[in-house]
Image (cartoon, rainbow, N blue to C red; front, side, top):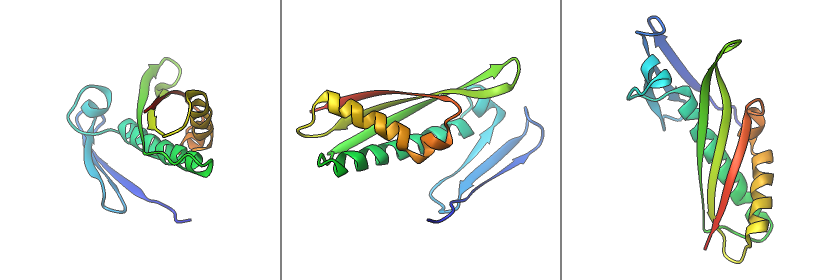
Length: 143
């Protein structure tokens, strides 16, 4: 399997500086700043990108698990809410990632969907990489 790369450049001090992040494939590049990370600035931030990566990985993992069990999904859509908090003992820390997923899977009941979703949460490579924060999940089966 290939090694994936991304890069970031930061110029200036923390509060008034700014940066650029990009992925090797060229599919994404974007600005980030103190304001976009710790306030409501217009640019992106590392936590938002972690959320996108986690949501994408989880959706793929769940789709794969479902298909391998004979339940090919029509659609799996996932949102990742990444919580960044200022901790007294550690500064800014990602303390929680909450996944909300919705799947349209013909012929599957909710109990089975919940089981497959939990397996995907545990097995997704990004979930494994981010095992430090509390990763939670809400899963909804739609018709």
